Length: 487
Ligand SMILES: Nc1ncnc2c1ncn2[C@@H]1O[C@H](COP(=O)(O)OP(=O)(O)O)[C@@H](O)[C@H]1O
Ligand SMILES: C[C@H](O)[C@H](O)[C@@H](O)C(=O)COP(=O)(O)O
Ligand SMILES: [Mg+2]
Image 1 (cartoon, helix red, strand yellow):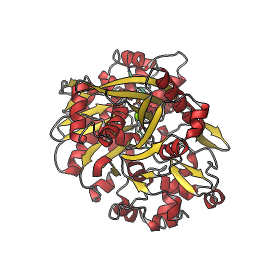
Image 2 (tube, rainbow, N blue to C red):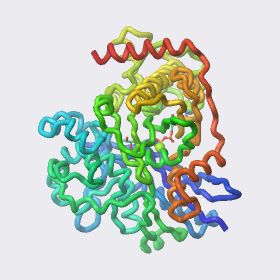
Image 3 (cartoon, rainbow, N blue to C red):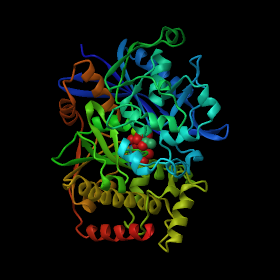
Image 4 (cartoon, rainbow, N blue to C red):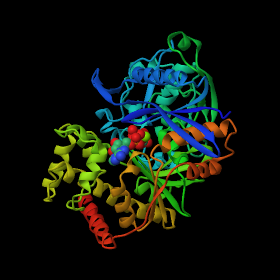
């Protein structure tokens, strides 16, 4: 009887419990529970409703028990950089603040006026994003920080609440921009800069470490299966990379969800001058790899457009409406910080951007969706060229995973703009990667390579080849536009 594995994958827009079992050499995936995620304004900041997320996980585990699965292993992955402050009584001191909160809007400038950017990048190899943990702790309430016994990254906090065991898993710890590449530990200069004592972070552990059983107290409140929690690659993007089929010789991945993370899997970090100037990151991956990638605004933009439209459209409907429109009617730097969390709303921001740059203003849902999808595709194609330039070899294949891999319009435009073959799927790659690390730990899968072979054997991966040759002119126009916008 095959073991039963369950992945808890909580992205910025939604969470899900995905059950996986091995049958006849294939990984069979079953969605057992799905719930919305999002932040709300509370006590002056945008905060995640972490207790609600834990309750949803326990509800999902009850559903799994009711479906007849009495014994499982469980892995938890979530978004990065955010953390929970835990006091001496083991309870959280506040609801965690979201990385989209504006408290860190000027923190990089403030902190790096004393610690130069190139010094931090040489130490950590991590991209400069306003909301990295380093800057959030720099802005954190000093009284709260003084009362903090443990600083727990979001997935580590959830594991701690469920099992009582506190650890800091390295793939997510690397996104703090406080891990030293050379020592493989928290850098004490950077900790000191943000008034954090080394012992406030629990011990660092690798992906695949067994955390332990769920605490008895939860069995008094919920009808749960027997659960052994395994600390997987707890940064959801690290799990997504594990769950990428990795097709191609010089392949790159695009984890396409609320965020788009485009990059390559390296065995040694690349924190040289080109990588620094292009703000690429060396987040730690599972099994000693590095996730050399760039954060791109992603489907966050269309998620907000969808929410703001007067009529209700599914994402599939928006993608179908976009296919009826002409592409490249306007150029948009989708990574412009104005799209991070626009107070006036995303549609307004997109339209103002096009007005200010004297371009056609998208009005209808189809025009808005095409504007988003075509400019994301242009941005991906441009970054693939930059990635190849930094690494010193052209990228020949792009593996697109996550919900965005369902948007065939974007898959095709990206293939034609970048002149590379695109392999799309699995859309639940993050959960699949979470499950694969559990299966390697329990020795049902021997290693990462065999795990990726299992993915290609188990899921329908769609291939998109370059078509429209005049798209290369569009890419050149876009690159010129980006240069002009930066000037
Ligand atoms: N059938 C679909 N058609 C178009 N877009 C889709 C479809 N399914 C998912 N998406 C896109 O994928 C996104 C969700 O991707 P996902 O990887 O689940 O994100 P996250 O993990 O950040 O919650 C949605 O916001 C939507 O834009
Ligand atoms: C801030 C991080 O880059 C962010 O966590 C990103 O890695 C991420 O969460 C991607 O996951 P989604 O599933 O939310 O797109
Ligand atoms: Mg995700």
